[in-house]
Length: 241
Ligand code: GLP
Image (cartoon, rainbow, N blue to C red; front, side, top):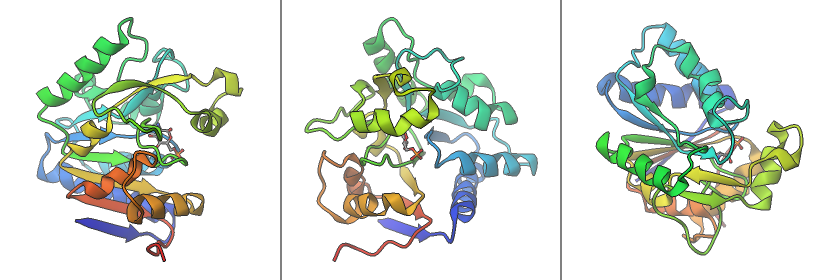
């Protein structure tokens, strides 16, 4: 079943999504969350920090980030390790052994992907996967392609993604060309998915993904096949005509 929640604005989208995540944590403190980066979830993390300050206990929750750039050390300001520290982890009491982000500096990247996948399994699988949407329809770093990796794997980023993410770097050539990402299969195995999409610039892509054909050219379209997906937007979303 797919539920679509249309929020009036970004703040409401963030608040609704954070409350949704908090609801799961309250019901199951040791739940396993899949977490995204990008500009969209920043508001959700800040709302979660506020909920934490009001008493939400995150100590037993385990988190797995979706992806990380290859070749950026965790200390690099644009690594997803830094992102998560800045927006969430440094603000909350959450043992570092409970949060996981792929190691994009691993000497053996294939081995790292396998290790990550095994850790997710050992944690009991993901209860709730929070996702953003790339402008080209990617989820995590699963780029449009005729073949999508199903497990955690190394990907080459498309030109489009490199350009889209260049705004976070001093210049485009600093954007890593590769990343480690959970695969579409790892994402689809989550018990529930929360897809959060902000800004009318992504409206058409989201409409195609949710109401168009299921195709590896739009990785997010595969989410249509998930039995429990909640989509939160801050714009209206008429079905395809
Ligand atoms: C990156 C991340 C994705 C994210 C996307 C969209 O490419 N790997 O997980 O969904 O950016 O980011 P934004 O929310 O900034 O548009």
